[in-house]
Image 1 (cartoon, protein in one colour):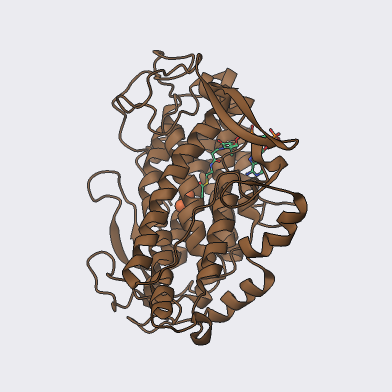
Image 2: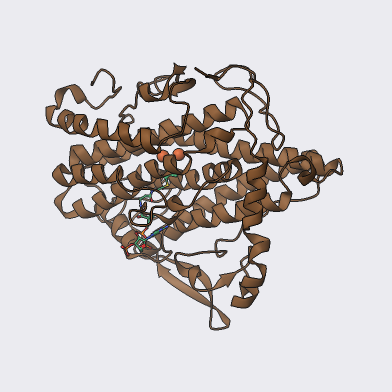
Length: 467
Ligand code: BYC
Ligand code: FE
Ligand code: FE
């Protein structure tokens, strides 16, 4: 079996770990069959498989069937730093094993991270049926196998470093289900349905990008195996986010060109601009909640312990103070009819600091989308909603705000909600546009074609060979 698990963690020389993984693997495969991508299990898909961390080792493309995909376990190469570089433990040698005093916290961080990976596969389960092109179908399945590899990566950490508790957690990863009434996934956005490809592209833009920022902050961890595992996962995250950004850009291009030509997108089964904006509102705000509360004692504990840093914590010149004991973070909240300034000691504000880094990057993505609209000659522009809009978690969850971040009375929110977030009718309309296209090089009518293929192949390459 271990020949079949590409790895650079010396699986061969660790019989205890082998036994644990051997026991878990059949359960993983049953889970994949039950709630992984529906259909396509016998088709041959042109997929990338990671087989090593060196140059080119993670980018090998070939036709494989999904059940025989080789889910590997990799640590990125060692960091330049060999000592902890933030929090109270600064200067201590990086840890190869879990310190007893942080066992609970590290377990919780890894379990929370891990749980999102299978959740997203479950959420995307039915999308293959309505893929707008073969290249999109390939991208979906690539994302799915890589999220499943991320599950393997985190389960490796649980099995290797957390003993019986870790094995128990690894089993539970396969028992919880996205959206299940009694056994839901841990974080809210991972229990939301992804019903159509517009939602998929918004999810991979905004929610996978939360993945990027969370993984990047874990890649600063004093617990070296966690840091190096998450560092390697970030390579795959780039493709997920590009899939999302490119997908929304292509939908906007199609919509913009139609509007420019004076054609109502609805008349030809394409997506109206206002529905795209509502989806952006929905998935960006749900992803903002994934950062946790702006004021969080958990976040302070993680930073103080060196368990989780800020985005690019170790970049020269980025942060002046790696202890973060003296500064504070300020946020404006609307309370009892007036704006109130909240001062949060910086360590407790680490979720807010990470969310700000994330939001800056999202703003750049929306600018690029707007440049696509501009190119088509359409006059509409997308707005990235304020961090206050539609929040269920944290400082801003106590009051209603519009997409610009201005406070609203509760009845005003109720009256306008349907202008800002998808309605049942919007979801149904988008569903009606989701017509599958499987002929190489052809695309559905609601989305512009890809500008190029992948791995040097042309757009009309047969990325999926149906059995
Ligand atoms: N939904 O102190 P607080 C990815 C809970 S995505 C439900 O404010 P904390 C991916 C919280 O558990 C990246 N519950 O927050 C993307 C706590 O519960 P207790 C995933 C929530 O702990 C696409 C309470 O509220 N990785 O990889 O500082 C496809 C107060 O919490 C939520 C990680 O998240 C929520 N949204 O921060 C595939 C990294 N938010 O203690 C994959 C690991 C908070 O009252 N996780 N709660 O029972 C963490 O770093 C932190 O747990 C969080 C929350 C940032 C998530
Ligand atoms: Fe992932
Ligand atoms: Fe991802």
